[in-house]
Image (cartoon, rainbow, N blue to C red; front, side, top):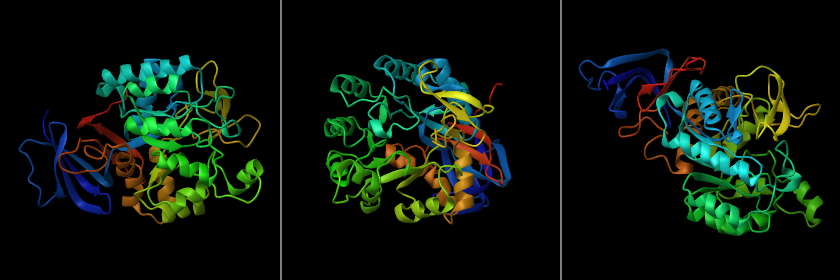
Length: 400
């Protein structure tokens, strides 16, 4: 593979480097610095970002599908379709995410993802970092738009074999469910980012799973307990909720769906100021409706999933205002976060790259443009639209 030199404004974790250069050899970055100081290999291919930006590839740790496919469809073809759709928008590492479903559907999802991960080529789109085991361990009152009737308490007979496959890298459980502490211990022992989501947990219940290894909460403010919801569940005195617990504990991280419809600007700004760039991840939480026309689709399996409407702006349950995941990829989230907060481009990009890499254990070889790391690089336009995506130094070219 010939050497490649990317020239333009380089996005680093804490600042921008105008007139910079990133040198790639044999799938990895070998040098980063001012173009005037970096030694350029003879005969290298030069890629100029013009007035745009050279960014690390995005890392999406919470996404359900795209281009008409959901990972819960349980087919390798569906995995590839979704991964290609996200690669078009700058995602280079992806964590296919489960939802509620039958045991057979969850196993089929793991099988399909594993097959694609083990046989991956650049034509398959975003590289699989691991599975986010997100459903089915949801609280019934917090299932939201996900398929109903499939939520359940964590069962060792189900999750122990699933974790033993080594494919799951992020694992969610509602903290108040019977068996949640044991699940969190098992997920931590398996090397997962242990998370809580779709939960009406109180502070003491959060504290119990925190002691068992939980350090992350899925999509902040969505399908989460509040002081009021816990009072309705447990009575008085009023107790702290998931939000208070996350904001109080420095080690806790969380996610934002910055699509412009889940959260108003002040909420995005608040989360950034309160948690900081090292504990806040941008996620797409994207459904199969990515890059599709408005219409009715399903969250989860194509036959038994919950119907929702893609209204062209966001997913909603038909005839309601209940949110049903986003319909946009990570480069959209980057644009909204840049527009609606004072984080600045370097920090906004970090929340979509290095921070999720750090939280899932991949920062040693991706998440930033640094010598020794994989050449996962995205060329962004001046208005932050993904123009070209490189995975391991090879450009992903979508075949329509």
